[in-house]
Length: 294
Image 1: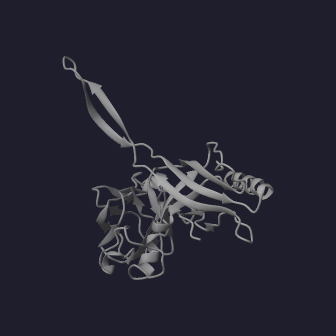
Image 2: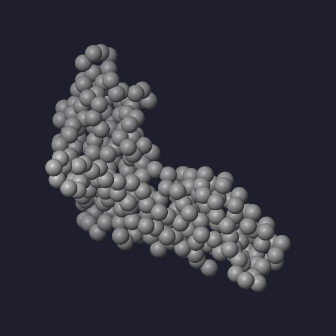
Image 3: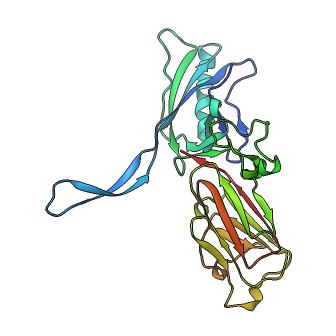
């Protein structure tokens, strides 16, 4: 029988629910998700009743999973119950997804206590409602990264992507690697991404194929990232150097280079993003990131 939620480890590998060889164990019945709550900043206005809202930020959302334990007999039930307890405790942080939207994942933990409930006179069945604590931001992320779309020259028919992920666009919009161009487009099917906050979920790789001292990458948000090592001429780049952005960590050939830059991090807005490369003509750039959804 189908489980109505799926679990993945932090390397995005599927983790089966604890079931024995003859089918007794845990079955996933549902994943319940609330909307995202918001936290507001408000101020009083002197001489006027009430308050005004001056700021709003997304805060958190509620999530829980419903499941059922099925056992062979009363003794087996207690074994299966304890195995479920150990299963979720050993997972630590993990990703969970609805089976019907299996390519959008949320990072969570089980931290609150929960008690299986057995119907009257039922010694081999129990139902569980397990609250989940979101670990990090309260948004879904895509199970796969954009380089999968790029290598497939569009949305592949391999189950990695699905409806509801805003990918109903031309394959020409799903290019995430460019060489030796002044301007290029990067399509973001999800929420705005501040790359500084996306360590592990967003990499920008620039392969240098010339000697260069300084260059600038302009993003579609009006910002610019600049490599300009004015304090040390030995920091000039040469053919074969590779710059990797991974969240707040930016390195050349493994060496951190924050002091050689203007300390800006590119932003990838929702939809199409026109990037401009200035001062570098012989290079390859790759954007490999996960989309983020409400």
